[in-house]
View 1: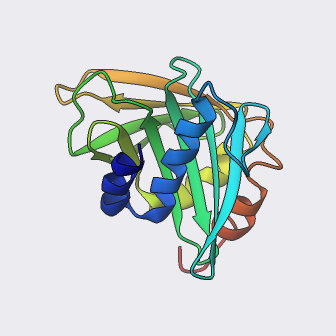
View 2 (view 1 turned 90 degrees about the vertical axis):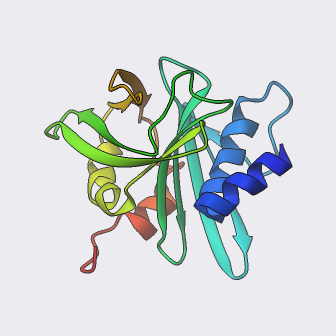
Length: 180
């Protein structure tokens, strides 16, 4: 698994790679990894690397326990939001696709997603910086990911409770910013 994480980390960066590690650890049958904490359906942790603290939280999809929403933020305010399958999605992903996001209080939104191998879709962080503050207040939201042929696969993520799991992410990466 470390080799797989290294290859993925090189493509998407250390925060998202660490978030994938959380998802794999959280869904493992063995004892939870050191430092992981739980709140409701959320698993969350933090780690320090080179004077930067990374905060990560993940929650499984209601439809597929192997598919996880990952939200990560570092003290240098880099936000990563991704949907990760612990193995590989069971359908072919396009390198770049338009995802459909639905949530109470939001119009249906088209979001750009970039796939990494066959197991991860990283959502445009600039758009997610504006959308996540609304999403974390909702009970749930649905995200549709298209196959290469356009067929949509919907994943629902339960967002509540999340006050402890997302608190550092909320204050660092989801607060209103003038440059976002």
